[in-house]
Picture 1: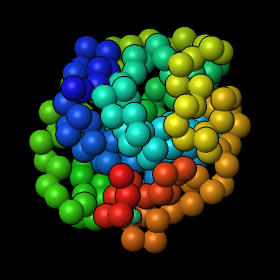
Picture 2 (picture 1 turned 180 degrees about the horizontal axis):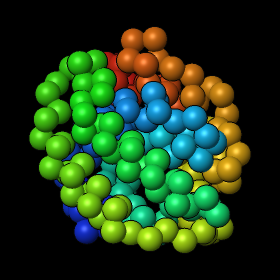
Picture 3 (picture 1 turned 45 degrees about the vertical axis):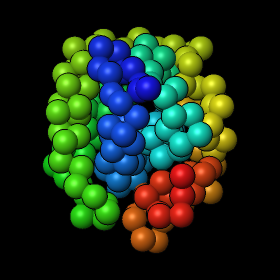
Length: 164
Ligand SMILES: [Zn+2]
């Protein structure tokens, strides 16, 4: 069982790593409301919905600022690829390089269009995200774990050992 992200398929174990490193990088980078909602998706994602966390890029709630949103998402992946925060992981995530590089190429070739009915804007997991990503997530969600510096999200820091 795994997760599909456009043409990229990842097993559940690889998806966990993918979400961990994007959460580490994104918790540092995200400043706008849209950016914080995106990173919260990774912070809360693939926890109770294992095997159902993939998405197509068309399912992101791109807004009129979608060109800037895409640039942020590329920067997020580049920051993850640089190893941002990897020293705070309890395992070696180096095999995520290939998945990040593949996903980056897919995103780079994708031309986003504003959408007001996107799948990822309907949070079944992650109640601190907003249906409208132009609105800031609830501050409880973007509070940082004191150990890992990552968004705590609805389900608690994904990197703390007691968490799912
Ligand atoms: Zn933590």
